[in-house]
Length: 38
Image: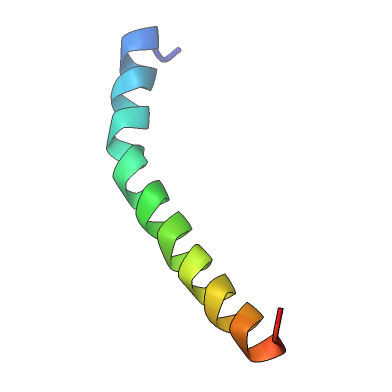
């Protein structure tokens, strides 16, 4: 089983890609909402 420290390391490594993906998604949503006039 994974140790708690290993999980923290894994989360730390995943943090950057996750935030990058989130910002890209938010940007895309922004464009779509502008096109739809929201």
